[in-house]
Amino acid sequence: MYKYANKGQKIVIFISILLSLAHGAMMPLFAVIFGAITEDFTPDKNEGEIERMARKNALLLFGVAVIAFVLSAISYTLLKIIGSKITEKLKIEYFRKILEQEIGWFDKENPEKLTTNYTEEFAAFATGCGVSVQIFFFALAMSVGGVVIGFILGWLYSIYILLTLPIMFIGMGAFITVIMKQAVVTKVSYANAGATSEQALSAIKTVFSLNGQEHEAGKYMVDLVPAK
Image 1 (cartoon, rainbow, N blue to C red):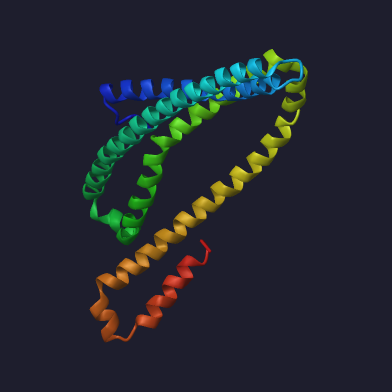
Image 2: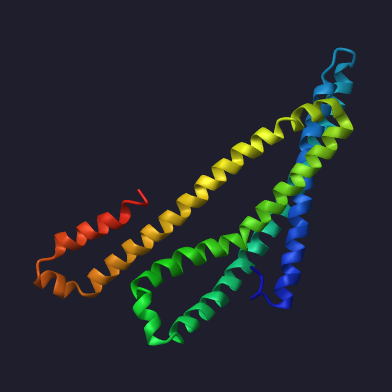
């Protein structure tokens, strides 16, 4: 995805990934601090000690939250900007390559579909090389950090929880497979529908002169059926 990123952008991407990892690693700390808070409210402590510990942990929670917010905001913003810049460069290359194709290529490929594909695919690409990268590394660090802290503080309960992971992976695998197949069908359906609409609107005078409004609307509805 980062083939079209320059050296400076790749450095920013690397820094953003490190910030995302740090952000994710901090999230399990919230659970640790909450655990400490529950231990503060025990009958063997007097009111002054409970208040002192509660204040200390509250400030600690606030500090972790502020740091997590800053890390998240910076990594998200940087990757969002880099994703947009790379996508812009790729759009120019894509459009240039289309214009360089031989005329026979346009006999095989419907030019009306290209606009819809151009819009949808590059929107997905911008997300994939931008904020999705931040979310992935954040989730990775949070998962690994959670498992490590879990085994440090309670290895037996952590083993019980890890035993459920295969079931979760099977369910998620099936879900992702269905979503991917749906995305392919939807993409083709919208591309065909976009081609039909652009064709009709670009020749709207001809459509009106032949009283073909209902015919074109019917074709458009048929193209949308697979996506529906």
